[in-house]
Image (tube, rainbow, N blue to C red):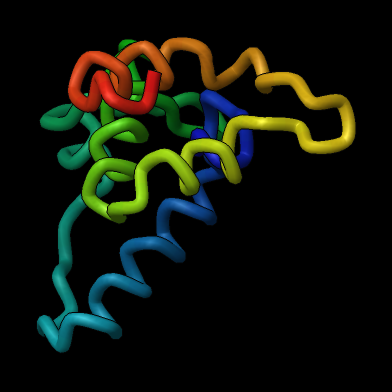
Length: 107
């Protein structure tokens, strides 16, 4: 969600994600009600989309994912800087704050 600079995902995209996880992990097909999933997660269900109940959680998860990838300074630059305008995409400000708190050397 963060890479696409959006706070919402289409429900079809969420289902595609689940299908990809099942197919890439070798786990057997998991049958569950999506309503149960939404009621027990940090996601909020809208008519055609889902989103995190708290946008800061999405920013935090994005920062942790970048940290897990490694090469934090290069990955961060590649994701958050508009190279044509030489500016930071505003959508990434909170994620950058989380990154600096966990990896102060990238400041």
